[in-house]
Each structure stands twice: as C-alpha cells, then as structure tokens.
Length: 294
Picture 1 (cartoon, one colour):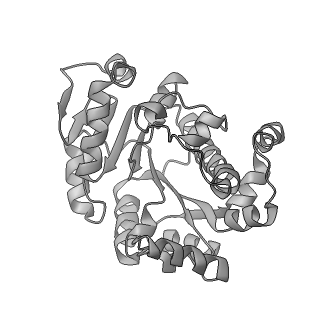
Picture 2 (cartoon, helix red, strand yellow):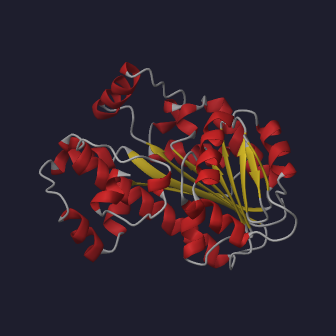
C-alpha cells in the first residue's frame, strides 16, 4: 500500500483493502524492501500475462493464499481476465475480504460487470460468480481444497495457472509437497508460479529467520529454501515436467531499464549492498506440465 502511494507501480484497488499508515516507514523498509516488492510484482505479473497470452485467456487462475491481492480487478481493467479466477485463503481472511468487497462499490461493481448467468452467490466465507470465486480453505489439506474448488466450478480440463506468493514457506515441506503433487496430478496443462525465500542457509538468511522467529513467525518450510536448485528440485520431484528458478536480483536486471531508473529516483538507495543481499534471498520459480504443447 505504501509502495503504491509513493509511485512504485499503479494499483487503484489496494486502497480499499489496506489503510494507509499515517507515519512514514523506517528508511530500510522504504528503500531495499520497496524495490524488492516492485521486482516481485513485475516478475510475477510478467509470468501471469505470458500464460494468459499463450492460452488467449482460455484458462483459469488459482491464486493460493491470495490474502488482499487485487489481481482480479487489475486484469479486468486490462481486458485480460481468464475464463475463471479463483482465490483461496483461510476462512478468516476470506471473510474480511468479502466484507470489503460487499461494502465498497469500486470492488463489487467489476465482479457484477463480469458476471453472467444466475444470481451471484455470496456468504461470509465464500463468493461465487461466473468469472471470480473466493474460497475459504486450508491449503495443507488438498482433498478438502479440491472439493471446495470443484463446488465453485473448477474445470480440471482447462489450462490452469496456480500462483503462490510467500505461501509454501509457511507449510512443512511434506505439506507443500502434497499441494504441488495434487496440482501436478490434477491438471493436464498447468503452470505453477512460486515466489519465496532462497539461499537461507547463509548468515544473511539466518538473520532473516531469527528476526521472524522473534515476531513469533515460524518458516516451517525453510529447509526447501536452501538454494535455487532445491527450489527447482521440489517442483520436479512432485510431478512437474520442467522447472526454472531465478533470484530477484536477476529479475531486477530483466526489468525495463527506464522504469528501473524511474523507481530508483523515487527514493535514494544508499545501502546498495544490503539491497542486493535482500534480493538474492528471494526468488521466483515456475514449473509447467504441458500435455498439449502450449
């Protein structure tokens, strides 16, 4: 929310989900962290749009652990909506999001506009329209997840993109393996995008883990975040045919240089070394299964 207000990228919908903090964030949050968020948003968005273009939007997206994400609205604005867009999160998070959608016309109106057929179904823990569904479920139990998604008209025969941003790391390696295995075995044509930590066995990684533990935040799946190779290996061992992984410094180097120059001019980045270390400890991985040679 803060990054958007400063001008790192445009998101006219985040204001309806997250209040703007009154006080300015600490400088280290502003500089390295905001540029890292910028690279994350653009990197993930690049892969999502590549998938949508390959399938000519004749596909579905399943956003795992979506939280207050605004991607559905942004894709609608760009005329890039898939046939169906699903979000999954804990029922408590889902209830909060649905409350915001119901009470704010700029959020509810685009859902109504894209909806066709019978009346839109909405209760405290789920929302079902013809193009957008929000499902309250625990990702650690994939049979329950599949059942709930199918109730919301998941079509396993459609090319499917699954997105997880900082989600798998909070599950045990066995739980995330089960989720990846379920996705790989359920959809004949699919892509999985995962954004999370990497290189967590070095000193910088250990400090990150200790800082989070002090805030009672346990990274239950951090052992899989040893390296880019361990990230790819997890995907390949759980049924995916191809897998790639790159750290965020690499992603940053691929971004349009004019835009990078613009965002570097927004706030002075004096701790370049710290920024680079931070970027080397996050990565984007993507895997695919492609029975129809997309």
